[in-house]
Amino acid sequence: MCQGGDGGARKCPDARIVQCSVCTYEWEPEDMGVPDERLSIYTGRCPQCDSSAVKALRCEHCPVLEVEYQRSVSAAGRLLERVLDLRFELEAGVPTPDITCEEAMALRVMKDETGKWEREKMDEKRQEQQQMEAEQRAQQMAQQGHRPPGMRRR
Image (cartoon, rainbow, N blue to C red; front, side, top):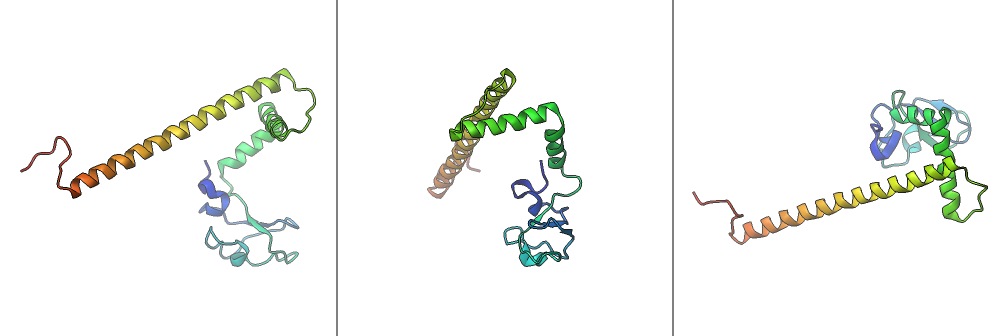
């Protein structure tokens, strides 16, 4: 969804603004540096409070910002937030207040969808593994002078 992928704003080519995590001051540094290294090495310390705790902010057109906004203002988004909190509390063993029917149904859907996603990821990994094994077998056969089925000599 985000152009930065799993790296988020730090790997987004359009992200240019950083924010101090202490005083929330925002500025545009000359260099954001290499995404795998500490950001403050390149941006310097916060010009406002001299903290090195800085983070890259998402670019203006990041779809993640719209999702976060909708989660905060829509009824479905607020339900999702409540259900995420409930799921965390239930998994952590924290006593929870009464759960509404709507929340219970959302928890069930979340559990079903999470299971579906996990199965899909496992299938993808299995297919990748099978592809790698097939390529390794073909490579071994080629090294031994065998041709894969369907290949003829010229």
